[in-house]
Figure 1: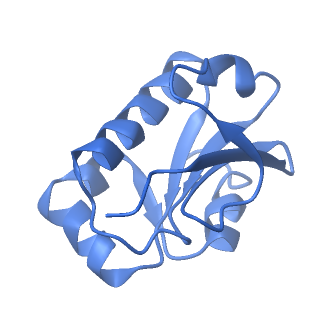
Figure 2 (figure 1 turned 45 degrees about the vertical axis):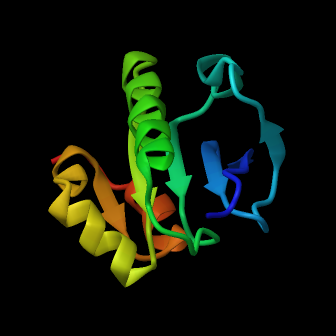
Length: 117
């Protein structure tokens, strides 16, 4: 299992949390206040494009905490998950019913610009 490295950057006013060894952005350390890192953002996108390991309880917990932080801050939360196996795990664990899941970061970011409905 690879070490869970999380980084944050802003793209078009969306806070993008990326996980994986090639993630781009500022490092998010355990215990960092994610809400304060997302101030001024229109939403939070969690990007799993660089993650190629199995989904374990640490990653699931990280996803759920990030979603809860976004929602409690009044922000929308989206998940970018291009890996088909990971999307299957999301389906089996019902995480895909808790959050919108997209196959690419471009699709994920575009969804923030759609009117609610």
